[in-house]
Amino acid sequence: DPNLNPNLNPNLNPPPLPPPLPPPIQYRAVAPGVTLRQTSPVLYFRGILGMTPAERERALADKPAASKKILLDKVREYQALPPEIREARLRQTQLRWELTSLVNLAPAGRPAFIKEAAPEDRPLLQDYALWLTNSPAGKKELLDKLSPDRHQALTQALAQWDSVPQPERR
Image (cartoon, rainbow, N blue to C red):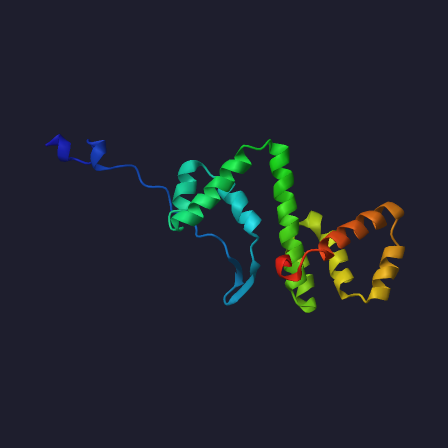
């Protein structure tokens, strides 16, 4: 019977399913037994944001319903933004994550973290890591070396950061 022949009846040979998506990246393996810092949640979100609805559904299939709803609501919010505003918000969020991660690292771990950060963020992160390790006199000396505009902008940013309660900086 030709209907039982898989070569003649395409319904007997459904198309292969696409390969499953990899699990969300939490740590990047660089060698057996060696992993680097946690991947930014912003990079994870960018990946989810760039998926098709079907890919997103597969990637989030194992998430609890409440977490999935929050994430998908945030995806819709970002998709509704003009591209340049969306990118600016993602960059700001990425920088905030990098700064708060840097603050919570031991000073010895900061250079490796900065090396893995986005290239455009490294100079600011290096400056901030230096700032964190300086005494009040050292901080004043660093500020005195800046141009007046840069000095004012940095002073305002640091004052704003210092006004955030310590538990909220994490």
